[in-house]
Amino acid sequence: MTPCTRRSALLSLAGLPLVPAARAAGNTAFALIGDRYHNSDYIRVGLGKTLGADLGIGIDFCDETKELNSATLKNRKLLIILRDGMTWPSGYPDESTNAGYVSTGKPPIVSDPQLPKWEGKPHYWITPEQGRAVKQFAHDGGGVLFLHNVTYISPHNDDFKDVLGCVTEGHPPIRKFKVRVVNKEHPITRGVSDFVVTDEQHYVKYSKDPKHLLLESVNEEGLDYKKLGPKSAAGWAYDYGKGRVAYLAPGHMLTALWNPEYVKLQQNAAKWLLR
Image (cartoon, rainbow, N blue to C red; front, side):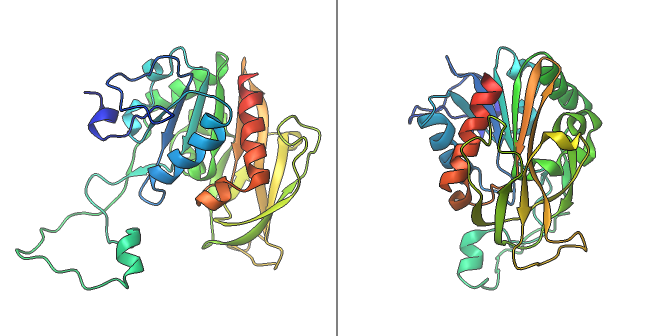
């Protein structure tokens, strides 16, 4: 079995069963999704509707980082990534990201016999080969849709950072903010109105030409983050070699992914990337 099938993560759309190969027949998109802080199921459900069921794009969803490679991307037209730059092979430092544990009031953790101690430190998973694979894919004509916390990968790989066009500056706790369209003429934003979501407002250090910016996030109550102010770049798109790249910042919650205006952005971005 491939790593994805071993972890029950490589799925095709429309309720099809797990597939034993790295690519389901006819699927043109590969989506690397999910991490400790972002359950892969809500992402699969969210994008499976907005891009899969609604647009008819065949997507293979996977949470195994090793599957991001040149072999997986061969003959694909679209790469989608919504996950951060960390895996936790030595275990989590605590259970704070376990929704069931938190929602029941964080009861005392008891184990008999006693649990062994583990390190609980992150591993930054992206390799030089993986960064080159993403860069080559875009340069050779592929479309890349970067979403939400993918900005946490780029500090650990220069090739990946060059394709994405930014590094993360972090984010405050989940709060309400507005996503404002700053370029209404681009095919991705055409017909899209400003909208409000409750989500993680991600702050980024954008490194490409400002003319490519499409969106900004704004906390209308003036709330700051690390003295960076109430707003940040939140979306952009540009040609990259023979390919195209787009980034959209919201995505921590299903309610954000399914905001009607954000659905338009996701779908317009996919169409533009696939042209």
